[in-house]
Length: 364
Picture 1 (spheres, rainbow, N blue to C red):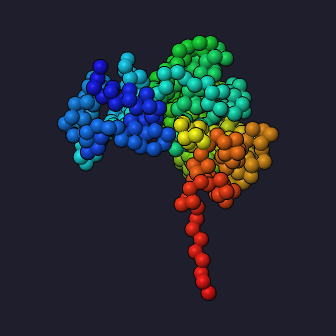
Picture 2 (picture 1 turned 180 degrees about the horizontal axis):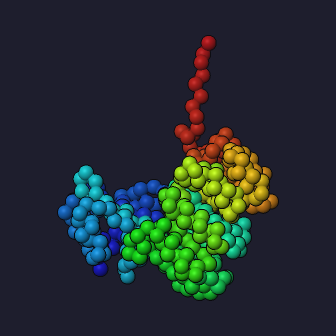
Picture 3 (picture 1 turned 60 degrees about the vertical axis):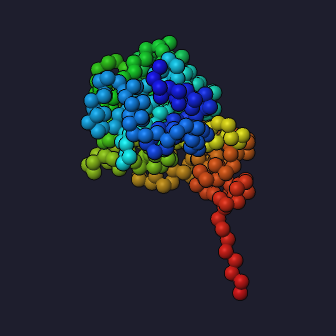
């Protein structure tokens, strides 16, 4: 058993989402969004280096010794599975360990709206799950892939960096590939996947124009493509894709999105009302003819009004989703206020007055 497993197991047992180790501080865990120290001594550079060397894959060790960051999955019989990022800072090494649940949660358990299941009925198109780092995108996508695996006889290829949740083939054949050990990049993995008779392709991150272009090609050639972006709303997601393309290809990107985009799910992770866990809150955009026309006519700024009035089609703005979860007492009211766009309608729920804007009275 690697010595660092003791910290990892402690974090997992307490319900942490992440465990952090760095020179100059004790190990820390992120519990319901907040960092808390583990009762342990401050880690020194040599001690931490030895702890990390025990778990670095042999084929990556030399790369790390040359001063490079590492991303890999760590699977411990005693402490479970983790997504790992190792890095160096001014005082020495450090690492972040994301806890991977032993079982893939279902879409129902995550409270994912039914309309997202409808997106997965499409034989072709692009479905995007977006949000900042640490908002649960990987878990949402894993649940979506698991639903396809349970209900469709597909060839599903996932491209991840690194592989997080492990899928076992059920109705579908699941092929999981990792950037680095299996393919050089997401773009290369997509190019290879098109030769492997896929029905569904998951792209861990649409991070550059080449990957975006390959994802478009995969969609246009008759595949269902699931992907992620680090954007915080449906409109910003569309803008990011178009802005990433060269000038001469922007119009083609807009035409592609208008025709082939199935929908965008932008999510945030908020503390639950009891403070004991976190819940994903989702802005949902379904690509209707009205939205397609707005994209083609460069009027993305009008999309939020369609989301606001599109509840019958399963659409919702982030503020609408926050307000509904708040009224159902599912999330912390202060978290809802902090994450809202239009904060005025959330002020009456706030329990911490320090969050509210201060009013200065002028005595005449």
